[in-house]
Image (tube, rainbow, N blue to C red; front, top):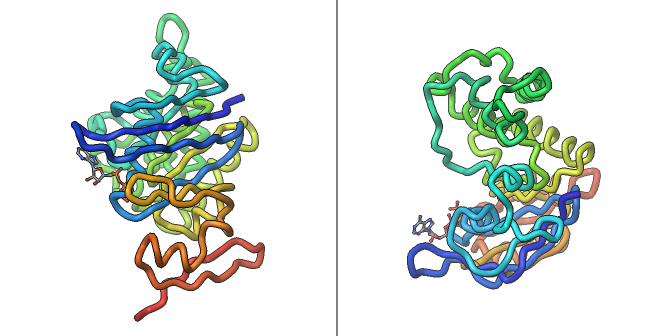
Length: 257
Ligand SMILES: Nc1ncnc2c1ncn2[C@@H]1O[C@H](COP(=O)(O)OP(=O)(O)OP(=O)(O)O)[C@@H](O)[C@H]1O
């Protein structure tokens, strides 16, 4: 069970408010996509949910305020993969991804066979197995991004916050990653909140979309409800047409002026 409730959340940096009045609920195993133009506050919203920036309002997981949980409990409740992570670049991929298991280790803090199994299986699924012993410093941008996501997935938190998880990934690796997240969601009931600029991919994987504009909610609903040419013109100043995949998911196609 991992139901996420966000109530009247506001946050900013120093004195400037960046997001305000954001309330939403994501049921256990649900997938919410946060979309919006550059600077609209998507990353700030994820950081506020994760408790990493000062905020007002509340964030509850299964009815318990996150702010009241102890560190370990909190790490089991919520995981976060930032857009631009600070990486311990001297670590190998395996050791880095194992860090994600920290909230699950026993009293001696040693990882066991099951932790290594979780890590190995993620490395396999994210096409990182052949890079398991390489230092992070030597990876390509997309490989590094996949290692960051493997670490976040290894944490097996009830709620997973992903900031632009497909940045720098080619279309095949992006699909493999989103498929894996979808599988975790179905098998373990992981609740997902993800920001994404690729609106077509966002529509294919997220059940609901929350569109931010200048830090405020501008639309929320199913991808088909939110991704209309009118909304995209108004909020992104974009000329687009909305096509449809065979399974009915919207495809956002830019139109050249
Ligand atoms: N650490 C910071 N200090 C001051 N202002 C910040 C900080 N981080 C972000 N901002 C500002 O807050 C606003 C929202 O930024 P945020 O990164 O949340 O937007 P975003 O929607 O994720 O943008 P993008 O699509 O470009 O990644 C921007 O105007 C940004 O300049």
